[in-house]
Length: 216
Image (cartoon, rainbow, N blue to C red; front, top):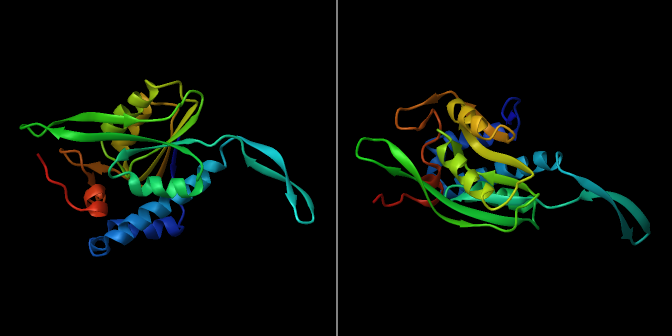
């Protein structure tokens, strides 16, 4: 399942437009904040799908019967670019356990690349809902590999994927590999370059959020 949060106009459409805008991108703090906001809205929407229970809450004047989350999800993200979205999700699922994965493109002289994962830190995930955030789903290769590493740690009940912008090619690849996953997108683009970059996209989300990195 794929949910495009920009199918109907909302504030997410405004935030995505600022993420794309080359002039607004000069403000790194605003770029990070817009990613965080999209993460918060995605968290709210995902929360509607999660299991809940009734709980009696004592107020100063009596007892209220409330619906509360049954179990917190596990929040996972791909370092470093995913941190903005992850923070937004964590603002809402504020008692969740967290998982962190390093995944990056290791480029070859011929222009192709492999996905390298060198670090994974995660809690117990058996039987839990996992929400993994990555701002861009271009080819989908790094996301799929990250999910494979997570699945090696336990049997995941349900996977939700949160991104700012996805490419249709990447979505199709992810759903072929993980057909039961649900993808929540800030917006969806249809074009991808030969080097695996989304068009029009927004550029390199990690660099725009945290500064350019040295390529070795």
